[in-house]
View (tube, rainbow, N blue to C red):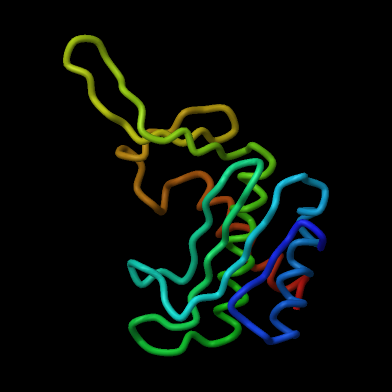
Length: 148
């Protein structure tokens, strides 16, 4: 895919899998640049992260966690999951608004994400109830299975 860069691996099989996921999700339909990096480990013992906007999306995937080497099938599932977030960001379904000031007088700071045009206060929604996570977890196995 011309708008995707993959770093941190020389495995042609894994690189090809990443490109198949991108093609399956239609990421080449966007002008967004997608950077996918594989790292030894990630902060918070996470298996993956995705961040960005409609111009640049960065996906980070871990190869190790606190228990040791992450099995390849789990790495591929993490790729599918994080690439679903990449699609959410590139398409504008999810927009990272960031820290915003709210209220008059005594203002409060909130971390806001827009999901399908609706503001979500990150301080009020647990991880498992975040709509973009529900969407990604609900679709990751379809992407994973169709791109093997």
